[in-house]
Image 1 (cartoon, rainbow, N blue to C red):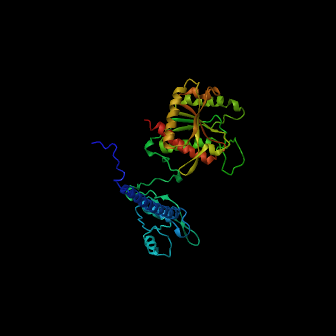
Image 2 (image 1 turned 45 degrees about the vertical axis):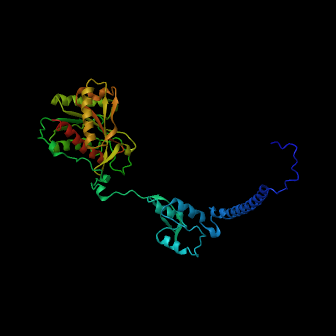
Image 3 (image 1 turned 180 degrees about the horizontal axis):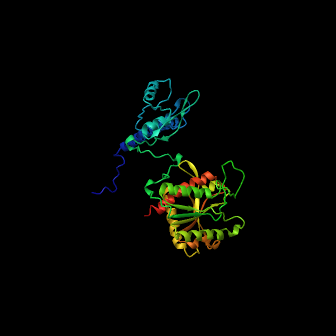
Length: 386
């Protein structure tokens, strides 16, 4: 049906909309809630702003001493489980708790004591003063390394204060002495080379015909030691070859050597015995078995036709010396010349050597000591090689 043209104006009354009324009520209610939450939020912000600076105050001044530190310890170290996040005051209700922790060795006012309890390898030494122990000054140190008794060797080592080395004598090297057939010849091209009579000798005498203080004194010791202790016969010639014509000393001593080679044909060892000239005594002196001993060295002429065999003999004696008496032979054990003066007569025998014992700065007693040890080396070379 169509309602076109019908006028309903007088039929319907104007009725207020229920929907519109509910909306107005809802708006009023939401407004109250928003105001409440706004006020609550502002209150929370205010309280947080008021409390947070104090709880985060690391410097902990006044009544809130160590407040921040206690919170850190509670969360970091298991040894402390402090619920005490209130004001720290030695006179308040938490004093008993602090006393209990202190009895257990934990001082929450002292960070080091807490860390020591948590980390076992740290120690906490207290620094003593004349008045009291300074407990607030702590230093970390590692526990010292300790060995058990079973891990410590009980083997004792010899003290080197006496400089004890190989014995001076070796009885096993002794053979029957046969003076009719000497095995060693000792002579001196520079017969008058002298030593000091003692450490107090200030005469600075380099040359002397006194056999008690010149190089022949060493030759006497070697002869006595070899014959008495090792049964090795020795010819010790003391002809003075260096007086009048010093430069011709080797020529003169060569004549002496030739005489003995003609008489005995061969020697197992021929020594032209000298001493060096060194102003610094310490440079040519060592200590063996507690006594001062002058060092010795060899002088060779490598262009002489017998050098190869002589070098073999010298190397053997150096080896014996280093084995028995370390440091007895000088650091530069061999001083090498090409020709020397007439090869220093080393071209006359395969077993000819030139030995320098000590220097003019040594005392005669020191070089005599050397003669004894040198005798043992010679005996090892001649009798120990058999």
